[in-house]
Image 1 (tube, rainbow, N blue to C red):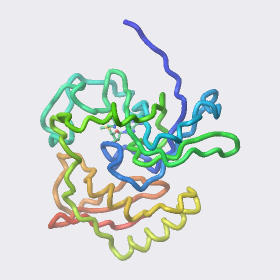
Image 2: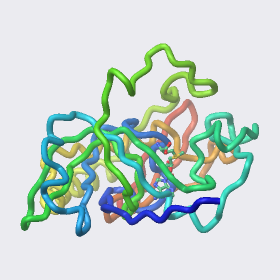
Image 3: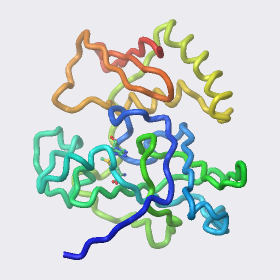
Length: 241
Ligand code: SAM
């Protein structure tokens, strides 16, 4: 069997500090800015020449956090309720023979800080620190197939929840947003909108989907976002601490 050795060409800096809560596909949230930092020798500015001509890019990356768990021939996609098993190659599971991911994301800008180029991106479904192994321009005439059949995932997941904030969470949100504008340099970040976009997709595994007192949390940027599920399809954000 032929084997191939790849080096990462860069690393993603994103707001997602753990797997739980990351949207299950790219561009399901449109608010968070991610940065792809190129590593030597790929950080030679020549590698990016003319890339700003493209509005979207394909990122090829390593599912580095799930890689140690290996792969399985059958997987249970969350989209099918977590009950039905399908072949790994009929899925987007992270548990693959070669743990390669691919995401089409928006290119916002090419940045040159301290002579080191990086890409500012939106719509990334990637854990902070994800190793990137390649970047390619997205080419609509070839990459977009509007009449394609998409099996069990024919359209974006339906939004089944309304996300509300307690008064305290609303206040935390405004404070955190201001701090993040300073820390990340992303003055356009609308933190409340980002949280709504993430939570309305319902990050819970399908076997946990009941209403109750249980408090859920995910690590976003440098804080814990906490929420719970109420009656009538309401998600209540409790705090950002
Ligand atoms: N668009 C991608 C693809 O098809 O290659 C992602 C599909 S996969 C189901 C998306 C999930 O991968 C995210 O919700 C997140 O939980 C997980 N993920 C993101 N970055 C990861 C990483 N570096 N290691 C392991 N899992 C990761």
